[in-house]
Each structure stands twice: as structure tokens, then as C-alpha cells.
View (tube, one colour):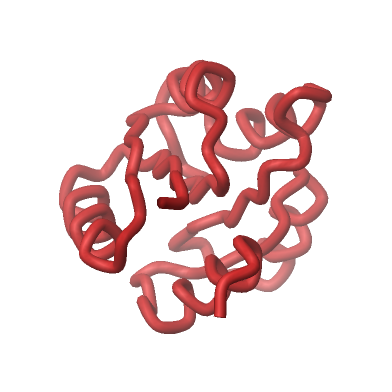
Length: 122
């Protein structure tokens, strides 16, 4: 069962997305800020990370940079989740080390396609 770390501070987004992912057979780990997300990435070694970019304590940009700078975790795919759909935000996410980018509100089928592609699932 693939393990997905969802780093999201908004309880409603977290609850909705984690339930939908669990129903599709994923193990979902949850962190509510960037610092906790890095800690859980190191302790749990998820198969993929869904990273909200607007987080307390440490934002998603900085958390992603730290995850990607660590040889032990740099190969874990990170998909940025952001309500910031401004031009340049996709490039900013990719520059921070994210492997892909998706906007909120979440289009579940589009996000699932990205998750499955990174995890090598059909």
C-alpha cells in the first residue's frame, strides 16, 4: 500500500483529501506544518508527498527545499498544492524542488493521475 504524506494545515482540506485517498487504497500520513512534514518525511519515508505551500511554522517552499536537499529524502516526489494559481507560481514550486504542481480546489481525478504516474501505477 503506497504511503502518502499530506502536509496541509487546513482541517477541512486535510479531512476531505485524506478520506478520498484512503478510499482508493493509500496509506495517508498527516502533518499540519512544514517542520512536522520534514520530521515525518525523515521518520516515515513516504512514497509521495502532497505539500500545501501556505503552511504555518515553515512554509511549503522552504520545507520542500529542505526535503530535496537531504540525500535520504530527495528522491521522494513532491506535488505542490496551492490556491495560488498566479502565473509564475508553477515555476516557483518547481524551482523550490517540487516535482509537480496542482491547484486548489483539488480536482481529484487530475491529482490521482499525477499521483499514479509518480508511483508507477496504472
